[in-house]
Image (cartoon, rainbow, N blue to C red; front, side):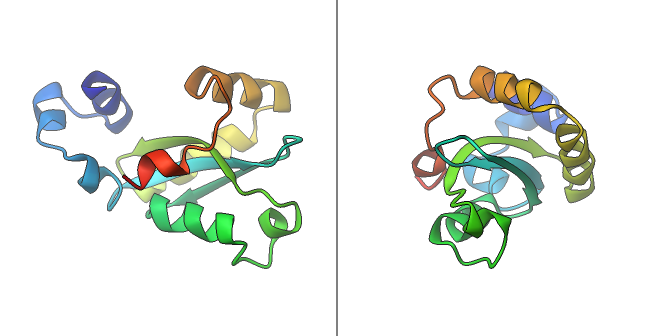
Length: 120
């Protein structure tokens, strides 16, 4: 996992060793995908992954995700900055549906809700 984190964040392995899981979820930028059972997909960006996914699951937004009940957190990437996350979000949004589903399945083969894993 350390190597994966260092690659995603663009850090050396020694820098990644000093990175705690808590610090990953409290700073930096994240791109994420929410889904429903169809699955309809929504790609978003945030600097607080736990809060944003909780908000989606609670339906606190009057938005596309609430209207389509996109409350299953299926994919995310951690990046060094919010600006990098925005760039990656645009790259993902430019992908076709098949490419997005393949990317999700590589990261999350069972297409399970990842929210319980990030709140530990």
